[in-house]
Image (cartoon, rainbow, N blue to C red):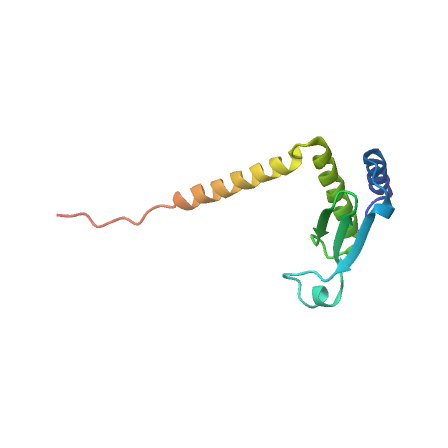
Length: 123
């Protein structure tokens, strides 16, 4: 799955607005870790970015595609730089965490609502 040119242009504009230059970013491609088998073991699809002036480091291995991971890592780097400059949390991360907690709570409640085994009545 390739990244659309519109998204790439939007990310470049965001970097320009933040004052981030490509020369300030160190990019490395390393092997991914975790599930994925032979495909992950023989390709370097994990992207590591480091913004030298701020020292912010980002590592992305969400997808099997190096090009897509490269885009996602840059977007994450822009989020972190923006977060550091604004001095606050990025609201999207809080929203995702809240959704995850709700989902986990529903799963726990669903697990508890199973009908209990009936106990034999005492005479």
